[in-house]
Amino acid sequence: MRSLTMLALLLGAAPAAAAPLDPAMINRIADQALNHGEVVDTVAYLTDRIGPRLTNSPGMRAAERWTQQRFRDWGLADVRTEGFQFGRGWSIESSSVRMIAPRPLALRAIPITWTPATEGALTAPIIVAPMKREADFEQWRGKLAGKIVLVSYPAPPRDATDPRFSRLSDADIAKLDVYVQPTNDEKSGDGWFKMLSFAKKLDAFLKSEGALAWARMSSRDGGLVHGNGYLHRAEDTPALPGIEIAAEDYRRLARLAKAGEVRLEIDSRVRFDDSDSKGYNILADLPGTDPKAGYVMAGAHLDSWVAGDGAADNAAGSAVVMEAARILSTLKVRPKRTIRFALWSGEEQGLYGSAAYLERHLATRPASPDPAKAALGYDFKLDQYPLTKLPGYDDLAGYFNIDNGSGKLRGIYAENNLAAAPMLREWLAPFASMGAATVVARPTGGTDHQYLSAVGLPAFQFIQDPLDYGTMVHHTNVDTFDHLRAEDLRQAAVILASVLLSAANSDKALPAMPLPTRPKLTDPFSYEDPDQRD
Image (cartoon, rainbow, N blue to C red; front, side, top):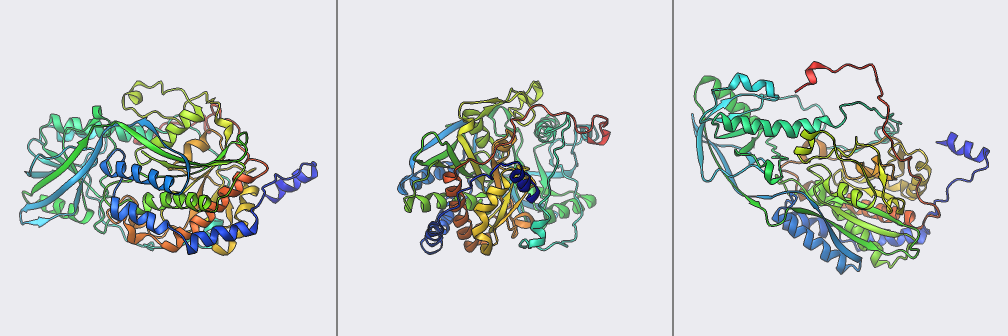
C-alpha cells in the first residue's frame, strides 16, 4: 500500500481526506460503550427471552417488533420495515426421537426446518440408504416402503486436532492480507442450486417409494445438531418429515442395522405459519446534516436457525449494530452523512434481506434465464449481467457488516478495494491497543455485505476472533448466550460506532470499485470434471 500512496504523491494527487474523529469523541464513545453500555442486555433479550429467530417464524416476528421499539426508544429516526417475498413461517413445538428396538434409547435429534410434522408418534424400521446424487436413487428403488430412511453415509469420526476455542494472533491476521484475484467460471453459483434441486428430488423419490420419513447425520461430532433446511416456499414444502441425528447416535443406528432390525419412534410437532409470506428488514436512521452527502450503513442479520438461540449467529452482530445506534444517538452526534442501521432477515437461506435492499435501492441484475433455477425461486444475483444502477446507488458511501460470532473485532476485510484501505486504516488506528487496527486486502463472503460488494459498492466485513464459532457454535444447538463474550461485544460496539462516525464525517466517501461487467473466464481451456456432475 505504501507504493500506491507514494505514486499518488509523485503524481501530485493528495491522499483522500479521511477526517479522523476528534479524540474527545472517541473517548466519549468508549465511555458510553464500556461504562454505560446495553449491548449485553440487548443480546440477552434476543437470545434468552426471544430465542431462535428463523425467518418468518413467531420468534422472528417478536424480534422484528422488539428491535424496532428499541430503536425508537433510543431516539432513532424513520424506524421502519421493508418487506420482501420469502415464504412460510415454521417453528418447533416439541420433538422426540427414540430408538425402540433393539433397546429403548433417547436420541439427540432435531426436525429439519420446513419439513412437515409426523402427526403424532411415527414408528417404523430404519434402512441405511446413503444418497447424495440423483444417480443413487436406482440402487434403492423398491426397498424403502414403510421405512425411515437414513440418507447420509455414516462417516467415521475424525480426530479433533484443532483447538475448540481460539483467538487470532498477529501472524494469523497477517496471513489474511493477500490480494485474491477473482476466479470466473461458467458454473459460478451452481453449488447452491444443486443443493436446493437435490433436496426436492430426494423428497419426491422417497415419497414415491413409500418411505415414511428420512434422517440425516449431523456434520459435527460431540452431540451437535443443526437442522438446517432450505425449502421455505409453500410450493416447495417437503412431503415427508425429516430429522437430523447427532453423529454418534447416527453411527450407532447404522452399526446396529448391519446386525438386524432397528426401529425408531419420531414425534415431530412442528407448525407452519402462512399468515404473512414476507420477510422484513428493520431499518433506522441517524439523520445527517447534509442531505446531498448520502449515507453510511451498518448491518447484521437478525434471523437465525432453530437448533440454539442464534446467539453468536447472529444476535451478537445485531446487538453490536443496535448498540452503535444507541451510543451515537445518546451522544447526540450530528454527522454530515446519515448513518443507517440495518437488521437483515433471510440471511441464512441465501442473503434474501440484503439482496432485497440492494434491488430496491441500489442496483438490479436481470433474472436468471435458466427455467430450472427460476422454478426454485432462487435468483443467482452474482452472475447475471448487465448491472443497472438505481438512483440511490451513489448515495451509499460505505457499508460495514458484522457476522462472524461474538469475537472481538480485529480489523476489516477490504474486499480487494485497494483504494479504500488507507482510509480504513486511518479510522482503525486509534484502536490498535484494542487489537483492531489491521486492514487486509482479501475478500470474505457468505454474509450480507457480499451482494453490495459484488456490485462495486464499498462494503466490508470485520475480521473477528473465531472463539468456538466455527468449531462448535455455528448453526448448532449450543449457539446460546454462554458462548458469547461480553467484553468482546463492548469492544466491537466502540469500534463500529467510531468507524461509522468517521465514515459519516469524512470529506470524501470511501472509493467504490468499477461497476462490474460480465467477466471473461479465468481459464478458457478448462474441462468439466465428471465427478462434479449431479
